Image 1 (cartoon, rainbow, N blue to C red):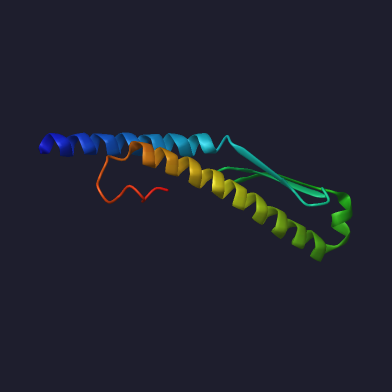
Image 2: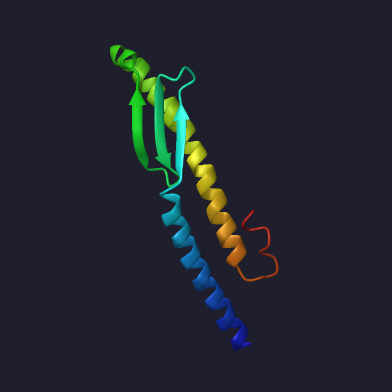
Length: 108
């Protein structure tokens, strides 16, 4: 019994280390998003850190339009980054979790 518990604890620790390594790797995965007309583009990491924002000079003439562009484009980029982040971390967690009855649907 204690061997099983120690084995599970070891597997959980290994999984935690893999999750941390995946988080670090996700800082190198870049997500690019552009506005529909291409006047604004943003780049984020899969950990949702903004790396760059590029905008056409024409957007500087209308503050409200620029704000709308930023909100829409950043929200789309954040949604993509979140999907990548969630998928990657769930895969690592699912792979490393011990087989505990009733918990198989937890990391879908």
